Amino acid sequence: MFNFFIDASNKNGDSYHISGDNYNHIKNVLRMAVGDEILVSCDSKSDLCQISQIDSDCIIAKIIKENANCTELPVSITLFQGLPKSDKLELIIQKTVELGVSEIVPVEMKNCVVKLDEKKKTNKVTRWQAISESAAKQSKRNVIPKIGNVIPFADMINLIADYDMFLVPYENENGMKATVDALGKIKSGMRIGVLIGPEGGFDDFEINKAVQFGGIPLSLGKRILRTETAAIATVSLLMLYSEMNLGGD
Ligand code: SAH
Image (tube, rainbow, N blue to C red; front, side, top):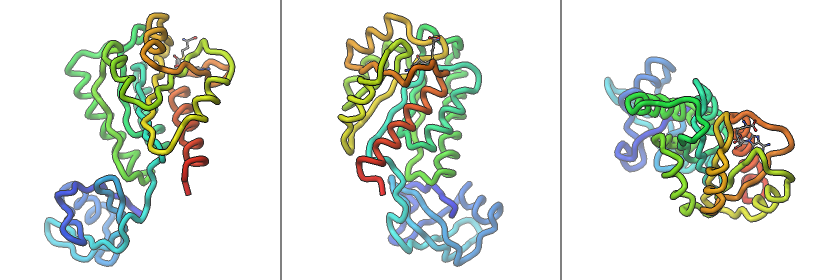
């Protein structure tokens, strides 16, 4: 079933009025017709709808089952990702959105190889947001995870306190005790932050600051993972743990 993200302003009683790119996609690309069913995601939930009318610039889709497909995790995960080289962040966005991440914020850290100027940053964030939308559609998410602006490490540190739990997978951490302990404390509805270092890993100053401000350093096993593998592994771990223990169906 195809999934479309529609702004709440286009909801009218028990139907959605679909125009613009979504209209073009449904009518001209997918060649759907009156009677066909689609999922419409709006305000963090998805309704099962049936196309009831196709006009010259608008499709009317009538809701036949509200909240038909709840796909969000029982916890919200914000991934703070040390800015990696080339198009690695695109892979990280695509995969972690599929796995259920709520938000991704790229972070400039000491050992980052890339340095983006302001104009490049704005263009990149627009592109990254489009990748998030396409992954959200593909994996039938109820929301499109937001890709935040690139922030410096010094700003990120002050955000740690906003989270119920803040995990810092650290390449020099030994043993799985901290990982098991942290997972055991996760409760439904928690806001969990995760900070992953860039290819060059954490600078000593950064890991110390992150811990001082409340981050929990933990291991992802005995092997050193690439930054993109570490991000995907951490979100997978949180996805599976929360769905298995906190009311996934
Ligand atoms: N250059 C570093 C590795 C950096 S890996 C070195 O050679 O030691 C990039 C990031 O992935 C790390 O900063 C950390 O956040 C995460 N990471 C990779 N392997 C990990 C592991 N085994 N445990 C926890 N975090 C890990």
